[in-house]
Amino acid sequence: MNFQELISQRESIRNYDPGKPVETEKLRRVLEAGRIAPSAANRQPWRFYLISSIENLTKIKTCYQRNWFQDAPHILVVAGKRSAAWVRPYDGYNAIETDLTIAMDHMILAAESEGLGTCWIAAYEPVKLHATGIFDDDEEIFAITPLGYQKAGFQKRGIKDRKAFDEVVSFV
Ligand SMILES: Cc1cc2nc3c(=O)[nH]c(=O)nc-3n(C[C@H](O)[C@H](O)[C@H](O)COP(=O)(O)O)c2cc1C
Image (cartoon, rainbow, N blue to C red; front, side, top):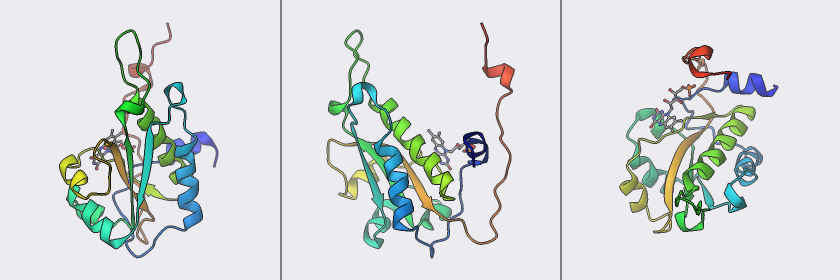
């Protein structure tokens, strides 16, 4: 699959086979894509939590109450320390959110290339995530995604519902 095919085929997956954990080598390749992502001043202010134990999955899944989310065999959490990120001296802009978003996007695309489903989730309850006790107190969580195979017979929508090219691009 070339890059254009990869980004065209990726879509948010809300269907996971709970009985089919992902092979360790594939998980490691996905996480490696996050590890090598760029970050402002190369600060790498992130930590990637791949949650797979029944105990931690049970805790983490309380933060987002959707049936399909409960099925996921793995949850990937992208966390970071604001104090570790680069800050622009002119106006105090902190790059943490940009850095972690790029890392998450790298991992989501890597997962697609491994034939795995993901769905970026921002609508979780942060208090419940921190109550799991998995994360450091000074770590902020910026994105989570389920990671896994789709159930047998599941078909992607295959539709990109996007604004038209000319609506979002200006050649000036
Ligand atoms: C920052 C961000 C937050 C999102 N949060 C959620 C979410 O909480 N729940 C959900 O089901 N999908 C969530 N999504 C998925 C979007 O709904 C989805 O990417 C968008 O509708 C485009 O569809 P596609 O990913 O299938 O191309 C999120 C996506 C992004 C980029």
